[in-house]
Length: 410
Ligand SMILES: [Zn+2]
Picture 1 (cartoon, rainbow, N blue to C red):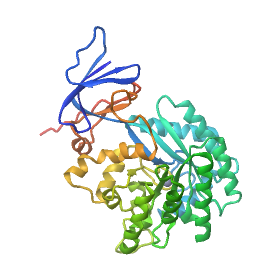
Picture 2: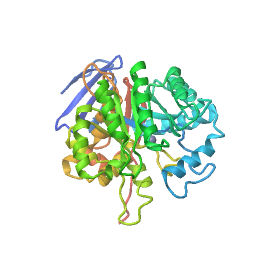
Picture 3: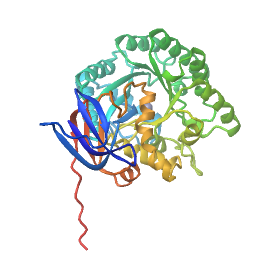
Picture 4: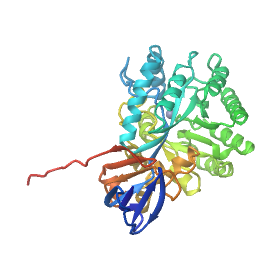
């Protein structure tokens, strides 16, 4: 197959791409079609590697209002609502909802997903369901599963055992929730426990870390310190870190030295955290999003995640990473021309680094995974909410969109 007249990642030049046996065989200007070869003319539109969803909860998605709405809009009322919904979980229910959300994501150009899955449930039914779905849908999406202890590890009955069992069942990645543990001591113990578990089983780590507006919540320094000591930084991710929004600057400048040394990744979830955080504030109200701009300037890897899709923690969402990016750029004040133009990296390359993906990107020899947006660069694509014209996976079309036609009658 030959893709003609395409712009790759904001490049100033138009080029062609030949795909053979599911891989990018050749990328260069003016490739002539072979006889009988399928040719797609992209007319100067832009190609990107597929979007990466680096933080979502597919086991809870599409449950908002069932059985109750989160009226206060806090993380903690969300956890209470979910505890009620959890009582009627079944494998079928999880697979149906998560499967629907994955198709929504696919229609928005997502092909790589890291989902946190709640393991504070003695039946571990959600992990079982997600492992099956991962297998069922492997041709359209790569799913990474995080064993996520929503109600704590040290603070939940048999929490350590449940984590170990989830890893044995096949979870790719180990989570924790230090700010939700009963005490600071439990918080540290839980992080020590998961880092040992990850080292033993050679697993990735992704912690819900300091997702609270409490400047005293300092799980991050423990996580970064252990990651540094184990030499596992690139395999470790700190998600949320919203308390960093409230840390004093003297502490942050000390902390950044450790963060850089540790080489850990960060995921920020700007849609959900602007909604959930600052709820105990009067005015001024904190934004509650971590210091994305400063982390990036320090050369630390940061990606964006949707986090929740229409569930007890976030009442909206269609799995569209460009909605996440749009909010993130505003709330993190990253609205310079170059910042907007290159912001796609937060939901592509940076996410791929967090997920530890190999062979990602539009390069000769890599799997032919890519999307085509109806715009000539990403600045315009984001601003104009450009359609995802095509999403190809290993050279096979898995989703497409026809741009809508708007009419102004004056
Ligand atoms: Zn989360």
